Length: 113
Length: 111
Image (cartoon, rainbow over all chains, first blue to last red; front, side, top):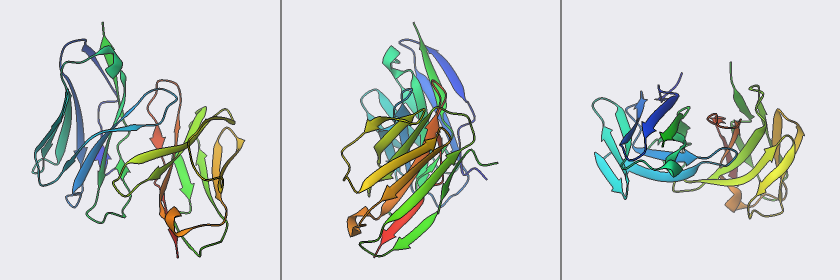
């Protein structure tokens, strides 16, 4: 039973345009959400996070939006750059800081020249 | 039909013990990883293996030793466990440009 879902396995976006990666979750007890970026043959690196008490968090070209009522979050990358081509993982965790992160299956983003 | 499976899911052990966490993937992937989840939910890569060969070996104590008997398995052995080793450890696998698949994590508690 997948608690964190990334329904698009891949996405292609023109360089300079906005990339929007989506993530849905099923458990309303999640209180912290994270996005990771992963290049081939490397480990995921932390990108940006958001607490459930917020609906938006921005860091440079990256913005994460959280819609708690819809149990949906999205990562916006503006403008998209070639180096953004990677796999992006959405993840969520519970209020207990010791709890495990629950990962989605990832979305591969391909930035077109 | 689990793609990446880790065992055990929970492990409670005393300081000074030696323990292993096992990881198996049935996806035919060439690359496998071990990560440690820190208190801020960040993932820190520990090791990466490609076709049974060590590719990435981040700064971790020598007490941590990965073992890859074959491409489908990457086990993590920890000697002389310390309190600070308590964490969640994730195994993952990937293949080229495909996304990585994560195991469910192993919560290690050292008492």
